[in-house]
Image (cartoon, rainbow, N blue to C red; front, side, top):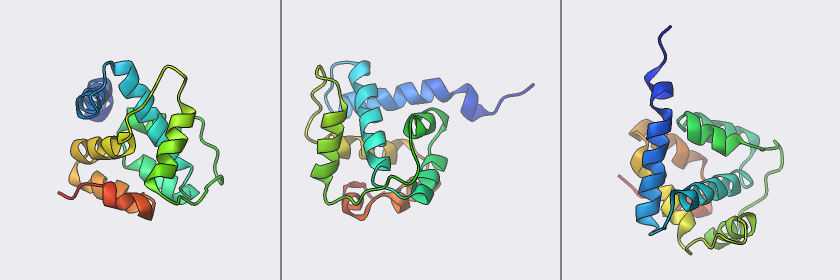
Amino acid sequence: MTQPFEIVHASKQFQEWLMALKARAMLETHNQSYAYMRGVLHGLRQYMETEQVLAFADALPPLPRGLFIEGWRPDTAQSLASEQALADEVYRSLTAHHNPPKRIVRDVLVVLAEKLDTHRAKAIYAQLPKVLQPLWPQR
């Protein structure tokens, strides 16, 4: 049985994303990259309606999609006042031994924008809360 390219290369692709985040945010370990990517993705979905979460997830490759959806409970959306509100949520969600950089939300969004193809990047951008859209780099 043949397997889709996206599935066969999912782990390698996600490792590339984590390496890109590690470099961009000047992190020391891949564990930090993973924790921060997960924290930002989980934080983002709290500020999205159910349809937005599903559209956002659909635009992600398999591993980040699973990470984004992991533990999600529909219909729990809150309004997002600012980038700082999301950053505060990410900080609270991480264990005591993680101290994310102040720009971690922006760094994760930049990595997503750089690593996704144009179609997927546009789909992700369309689902971002309005206060975060200025953080998304334009191609």
